[in-house]
Amino acid sequence: MVAVRIGRNYIITSDLPLIPSPTDNPDKPAPETMSTVAIMPPSRISTPPSVAVSPVKSPTKTSALPPFTDPPGWTSNPSNPLYQEEWIGADSEGQVIARDYGLQPGQPVMEDDYGWHTIFLSGNKFYLWGRLNDEVEEFVSQDIREITSSMSQSGLKGLARKPLP
Image (cartoon, rainbow, N blue to C red; front, side, top):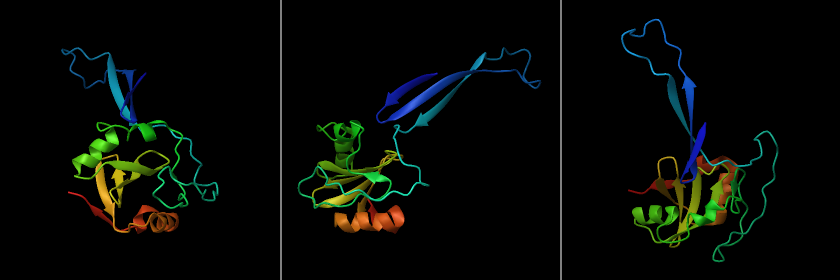
C-alpha cells in the first residue's frame, strides 16, 4: 500500500491479487494485480457525534474579528499546520482559490473537523470554500457571530449563501 499526499488529501493505492473468472478470455493473459485508489481527507482527531460537546470559546487569529464561539464540528484553531500554511504566500492554495474567484487575498477563519470546508474572510465578506469541488460561496450574513450561531443550531443548511461564478 502506498499513500501520497496531494494538497491536503491523501491518495492511497494498493495492489490486490486477481483471481481469473471462468468468463475471462483464455487467449488473453489476465493481469496479475489490480490497482485500487482511494482519496482520503486529511486525518483529523474529532469527537464522535454521540458525545455531547459544549462549544469552546476561541478567538480567531484575526484581530479584526470579534470573538465568537466555534460551532460543533468546526474549529478556528486547527492543530493541522496545513491550515495556516495553505494561506501563506500569493501562490498558496487558499490565495489561488480566492484569486480564481476574483476575490481579494483571503484569511482563514475556521475549518470543519474533516478539512472539507473552510470559512475565510476576503475584504469585509465571509466565504465558504468547499474543497471537494473547489467551490466558493458568499455568506449573505456578514456577521461572524450570526454565522456561527446559526451553524450551531442548524449547521450550514440554515445559512443563506450565494454561489460565486
